[in-house]
Image (cartoon, rainbow, N blue to C red; front, top):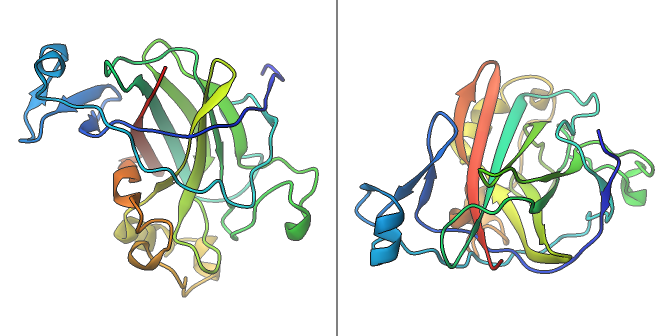
Length: 229
């Protein structure tokens, strides 16, 4: 895989009213829940809005490697991510946007951090560019937890030399409970923070919930992010 490096900064946005189709495409949804398309966007039935900004957090490392498989041998429940990027003004997919993700391993540890004793390791970090469909895809594992935070994945979207959003992606607590009954997560019981009492999630996290479906022995999570192109 190309060893290109990305190092840009800025702010993140997403599309409200978009839902991932089970087979991988995207379905536009109106407020009433009816499927819609470009005509509905033009008529105003579907509106693309900015998502809440969320903190970058202490574990961002600039210059992540461009790669789709970010597992680096880490054990855990397989998770396929499909992260869509679209123009917030038109709701059309954007090709070539760089999507940067990073998250903790099953033990709640981040790579390449002195405080974690992982300097030089790059597990569970990577960048992918969006295809013509607007999607960037990653192969990873379900994130672990650490004290004081609900389960989450960090994300940045880079376009034209700028980061156009910094955000965090979340999971339904019931799904996390089910995943954490398996190994290796089950060796660390009693996570102390759920979505409802997470200081980041309560400020708009419900609009950053991944749409997750079973996929083989693991899961596939999808979300659309609307940005200013």
